[in-house]
Image (cartoon, rainbow, N blue to C red; front, side, top):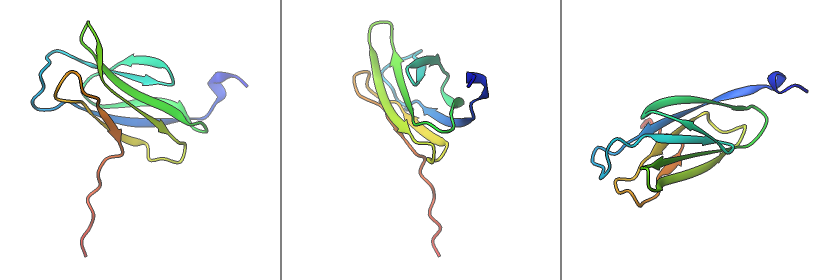
Length: 106
């Protein structure tokens, strides 16, 4: 089977920078199954195989060290939208999770 023939899905990832951070000019890098992709803050979409679990990670790099690292294994049945929150301090980890949904109160 050719790699171009495989079914794919899209994973939406919203990258949030804290309003107060002790670092400037830092941009995130998104890692999908071991391949790094430079990214911008905000909403981005990445392609992944539709029938496989994919490891999705994000880290920040300041020319000296990596920080804000977070990883999540995304199953084929999981929701295609995720949110990454960067840490305020350059030595803390970040977090990736499904976005919070507002519960309807009846």
